[in-house]
Image (cartoon, rainbow, N blue to C red):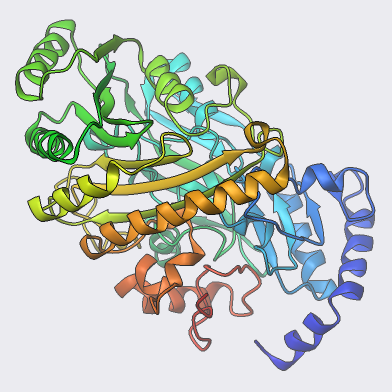
Length: 507
């Protein structure tokens, strides 16, 4: 950070008052919220008790021109940190500047237009569009879809930079690989197009570097595909009675998942006293679906909890995204909206890519531990991927390609269940101890974390968060950062640093 920037940072309060005056003068009709406003608490609300943040102001632009003016006001006032909020889904609160930040937040919630081109099979959307809303629009306007992450209230401007791994990833790949073009506003206030031919280095960097490092994505165009014509969801459950049966069932699940037809999209889930394999079938005809179901029945261990639910594509996503997660808080996909505090919860998440099939030794170790899992508030999920699909490893900034599994795990305690903050926090900390032990069992078999599930604790025990999330791509990412945001205006604890600055300190 330059000497001038450091001086401005020390005088942050007065700089922010100047910013507030500038915004009120130049953008009088733009939604804004500052600490003295009655709207500020709602504008800065987060669903995760573990991600408190104290931004100094929130501005919600409605156009690229307004984003440009916000950035010009920020630079003129000496603002030293801008954060970009899309879906507000960062587990560490990065889209509000982070726990130790003092950011002006550019909230993209108003920039959520969706335009579907049925002939080209593309969608052009605002940076604040939620994935669930795009799912519905694409399907209703042309029977189209695109692969996204499992959670359906995530913002497109954020998830497109992370990966987007979900219940159709094995068949159709990941969201990041579908980006064709983006419109961005940079730290100097200029608006640019970003694609394979224009600002190609920035196009590479935003695909895999997480969120909020390089500028504001105001619009993005993604490639869609025809939705499967005869899909279904499947839910297959096995009670966790003992370690031996757990291990044998898990081994069978893995063997089938690695060799099944591409239409089979599995997730192995450990929670609520069960070992489950669930997911979606991306089949095109009822006959193809029935044949795949018959194959599953033949090759997976027998159980009386074998449930197949044929439905159209949107309904399969509704069921997976709203009924079978740790946060089923929306009645249907037409009601998807950004979460605030209406479902406040203590939630911690950890994730890691697994580059090879799990060994028998690992499975047996996991089995012994899994049967100790509490029946509420904890979940381990292992998403099946196609290691042979997707763009080449160097085509994007995604660190981990060619992996058959993406592991994620979480603990959560809703305030509504706990009754009060103290009980929620105490219960959550207790669950988190179990979660950390589970993660250490997986850790030696992983090859880095998933930046879409940001976790400061990845820096614990002497580990390097930046190596985990960015690996060999970090020097090139730093060079792109230095080119497009040399003053590090867009930053948080896990954003890409400029090349002459060290990575953020570890926890």
